[in-house]
Image 1 (spheres, rainbow over the protein chains, first blue to last red):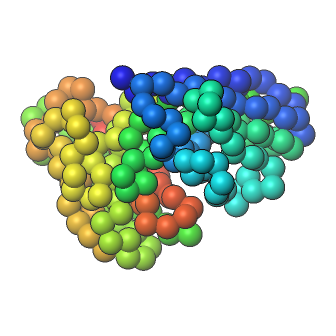
Image 2 (tube, rainbow over the protein chains, first blue to last red):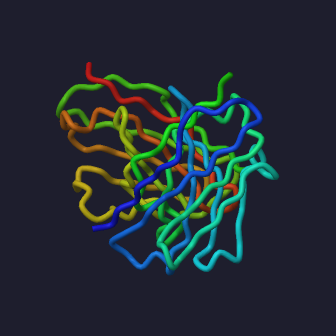
Length: 118
Length: 107
């Protein structure tokens, strides 16, 4: 059974940093591209970032470019999102998701809440 | 970036109704269109990928169609568990973008 479990969310002050993790199991993690998607309270889904299977290629939404870094450790079956210079507008539930055959997001974690507030 | 526009934004329907949700892309995306269902407090769930392919385990009352810029998600006979928010998503180009969502409510 495919499982994705996010962790690392919490309350952080504006300008602060946080690192999210996504532990994967039930599939060959090193064969799949992975994504982060976020959802602000009461709002819609917004794509954040993507990484290819070996970690050599990444993409970011303009809103997080230069502040967030996606990475992965295939030996640990874990995806990461390092978030720096956090702003109030980064407050959201952050989901990790697996990339499917046509860049559909075929499995999602349960999400982890990041709150940026003083 | 490719803009995705869903209509309607919200919809009231009854159990047993046939429901159609529309998604329009700001430029042609071929068949790179996916549909998700999200229930309150839960992660999104993939329903349809590549415009018309049913994800494994998804009931056959869900179907998708379209290509180019115009797409539809149809639920042939609404069940109580189908009341949720639905999102379309284009995977034609980076950045991946989602529609604003359609909230399906019980009439």
